[in-house]
Length: 273
Length: 275
Image (spheres, rainbow over the protein chains, first blue to last red):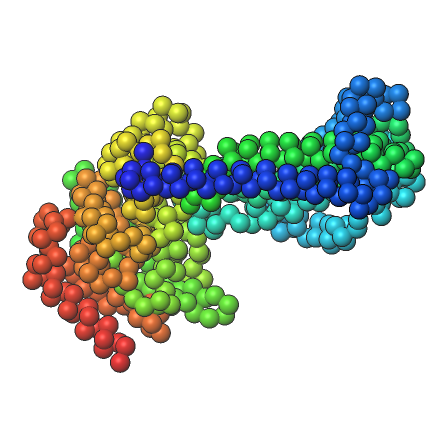
């Protein structure tokens, strides 16, 4: 397949196999080390269990949540409530952010309109918006979803704009000399050029969305993994706090890996030019 | 001259023959005192020349002499601020598939296969999939890319990528092919092969080529005429005619006395200019 011949590639592939194996050994060794430190620190009683419970205690709380739920609601329902909030905010925030970001990248007037409002909004921490959102939208689903939505939107707007701007001038010119109209240039050249940065933006946005989840679930309600963490913290049930955090962490890990995998398939040309 | 005055005197009596003759002498590309100002500074001034159908023009000159600006005006990327630039007797109004550009940076679409890159102009003009593939297949064969239709550009070497860039232009069947240092990024052996291929393709397709280069050898080997542009003399250029034997793509021509003689003339002209 490769016009440069095969030999070089075989060498490279062997090298790759070796370095990939090392990569995965390290990837699993680092959390294992943290876990061992955790076991040692708790069994040697360097810290009080109410501040840092042992893995065994956390596992016990975790299985209790799995079997009996938390505050009378099954863990699955909590998880579903959180995922619905994050998912809704992520999907709509991404669509709007990518659309406006790409328009900003292509049309100077659109960029001008969003420049100052966008940059004023961006440094405001989501937690700072909570009191306002309670005033404006109450403590229902709307405020929770909107809080996450705003963060996703801002991240995606920036990355889609940067991606659009990164399209090389020669690629656009090449398309023009092929007779492409404005729409075709956008659809076949500018949009694919922006995809690598959009995919990276999606990963950042999803991670941020999950990190804001707990804050969003501060806004009242009795469902959600963030609610479990906050509620358990209020009652010093530290083992449940940890179990909740681990659930959110695992959701984050799995969703990030899924997005990274999809990204490699979609933007297969990235880093190979 | 005679032909046009005859035509002007008796417009009704144009036989098919004289129409053909008129077309063959009529330049495909004409610049008439074209100037371009950029940031209040002249980049090009009163540049006039014409190119006949089927000619290969190579353009030599130091950086900043305006050769890329000239090419960009032909491509339609830049509008002249004075004078007039015509292709097929029509003023150039913007980029279009009748003037294809082969870029030094290749400017391939990395997300498309080689065949989709090649057929892009057909896709833009609404041709269906099977028409696109048929043309892509033919053109891939013409430029020596057969078997790589389903590859992606990043799987190709530099020389093969530029073949793809060339094929994308050829598929649109342009009146003029514009090439801006297309082989500057490939190694010497590949470069010479590609030069020979260009002349072979030119013979097969009878296309007109304007080719910018920094290499005197490349300029002499490819050209029917060479424009040597000078820095600080915007719009003024020296012209050299090359009369090498057919087939023009033969590598033997690199050792031909005419090749060596033109090369020397250009070398001396450039030296005189530098001192």
